[in-house]
Length: 276
Image (cartoon, rainbow, N blue to C red; front, side):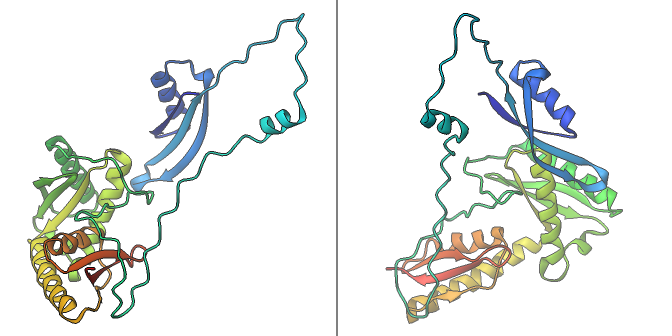
């Protein structure tokens, strides 16, 4: 049975769009609402699963249908469930001085999407994606009454670095980048629902990100030297995903240590451990 997922402003609009994409009349489309969200500024979206309902052929009048066996009837009444995805293995609880096998984290730790699932397909942002994100930021700043200009500065993989400047740009950084991180999270939530292409924005104001990245690299490098000398693990404070990637990347080239992440968002931490 053909099925697709559609995101639209209403169930009726999603049904019509699904019928067009599937090439069937709306009466042949069965819709299941997966998610309904009331967005910012009164805008709402609904995500549905649409399936083509095939009409069942009527049996010939002279042909009496056979009565199914009890086993067949039970199998039909209770369809076999789809196999569940294997749960992600939990990382071992770190212990001081222990040098057990650890799962080495990738240099670029995947950032979860708005529904919590990590994107598996490799996404590469384009200039058009950057322009769309800049437009989204301008729209958000305008509605918030802030005088902030946004400009796409760099594209790396699926990440678009957007530089913020203007009269109110300093207010968007906040203490230790808390306001900037919250604004970036909001922008990516909206982008995920509006564009649904896996592209992510990294917001920077007053070069805060570059200064923060330099401090993270220096701190992680120093801790890695201590871990290698003592043979004991070091656990960093909780960091957002894009800052954990900085730590994983800078330490991936240092021999004698390995890094991995543990915990759940927003308290997920990087662990620097001796390599086996």
